[in-house]
Image 1: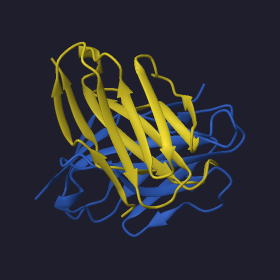
Image 2: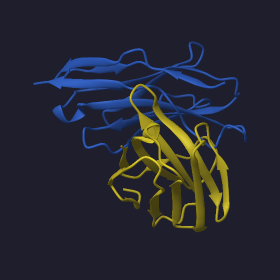
Image 3: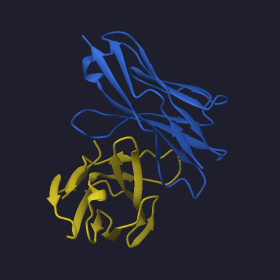
Image 4: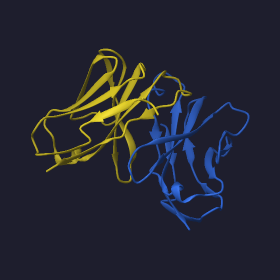
Length: 117
Length: 114
């Protein structure tokens, strides 16, 4: 069965510093996709970044990058130059390639990030 | 932003009453999903649809039914609401079903069952 683990319930970071949010996963699928979503206090789920299991390079999207270590089954989100608006809940999610598992996202329990001025 | 709306955005109801939540998209995406979000659980899939009139169960489908009569609308029904169904409900859409296809979420509906 697929599983996502986020071991940091909450984190603080100083404004303008970088922060890493941890995500480990477990799957028997040979191919899969990993996603990060941001949920601000207003409640919406905002897609941030995607990493495919066969991608050779780590994904980057602006200030977001994904530190993908396939052998360790980790897909940590790195936010550079933190801003006050980055304060939110962050969810790691996984989706399989196989027909019977690819229809859904499996989510972790999330990490609440607070950016200090 | 993906064109996804949910209605109502907030609802308070009583145990035993039927409730229908609506998800509407303007993206013409084939796949639509209903998730619920509870503290400590992230989001969990309730039901999904892979086309008009084509739906299937997710991991927490008990007590819920869905219908999709048009590409743009996906309805979630609680036939007889219970307090355990108090939650935030999110609709999502995607253009495809493979793992590279991103799911985009609606704004959510906060449901309280008293």
